[in-house]
Image 1 (cartoon, one colour):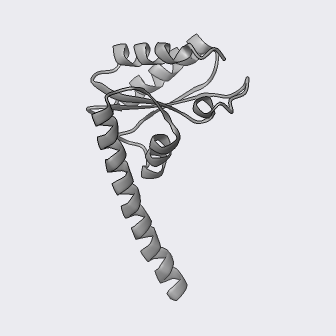
Image 2: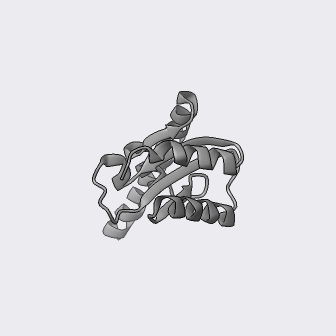
Length: 128
């Protein structure tokens, strides 16, 4: 797929959604392992949670434009594990370095807390 699709994603999302702070490309399209049948995985962070129907409509608009399935997630409402995957392996397409840094820091903190909580649960399971 032509790599000129990235500016199209940014333009579409920033003109359609309110107060977009960050846009990431993640998954196979960001690491170069995409194939002809690969979908496009995009994560967006806005000041407020994005209406699910609006998110779906944006994904469908992009899917029609690119001729591929598009998965568009809202970083304000996704799981901590998915947010961590996006920040660690994704490519920042749009947003300022300070906003990216703050979101990465918040996500890492939440992920660390999740890991600590999981450890307590696993330890109590094995220790009876």
